[in-house]
Amino acid sequence: MTILKLDATEDTPYVFFDAQNGIFDISKRSLPENAIVFYEQLLIFINNYKSLPAPETKVNFHFDYLNTSSIKQLMKVILLFDQLATSTKVFVTWCYDKGDTDMFQTGQRFEKLTSLSFDYKEI
Image (cartoon, rainbow, N blue to C red):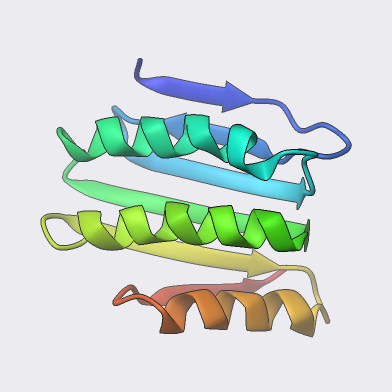
């Protein structure tokens, strides 16, 4: 499986993971009824990708809302990319809506818990 694509719903984010090109996008809102079940498929995909990654990996986040259970699961996703960064280049872009200081600070908290450097973009 080289591509994982999930359309956004009212409760789950848009996901586009392209292993061949090293592109990982997650956006919109994340408040699934069971965040562990939803994010499990993302974690499995990233774990498989880690065995044969692209020369560069680009990870793009742009959330307008994250509930607490999503934050916990998203941290697991980010930690996998942090592990990957020990063997290949990983670029993380954290986008947030103009004036959304809460989402900006959420990105900063994630960044502090890893060795990754985030690029922040206000949109």
